[in-house]
Length: 83
Image (tube, rainbow, N blue to C red; front, side, top):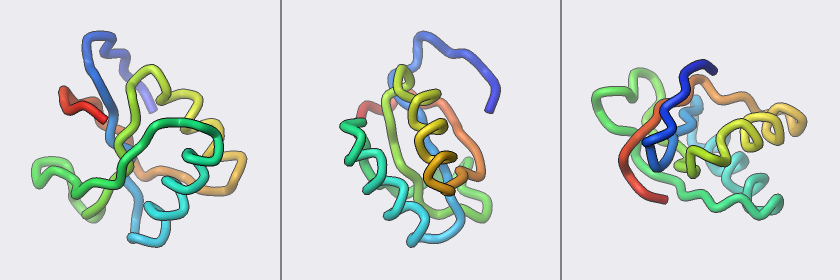
């Protein structure tokens, strides 16, 4: 997942299906990463209608943890929205 936007507050991690979103949020919470399940913005949702919102500074750690747990995000999109 590329792109560096240091001025951004948070990042949407988009998944296929609510089960994956819920599982990802639970895993991130266990690792003390602040997150929130949100409706994906219409402009980026595509086939993903829900997302996990994390702080942009936690993005790389979040992706690494989720991959180790076997949960892969479809895409990541930076946002000005706060967690």
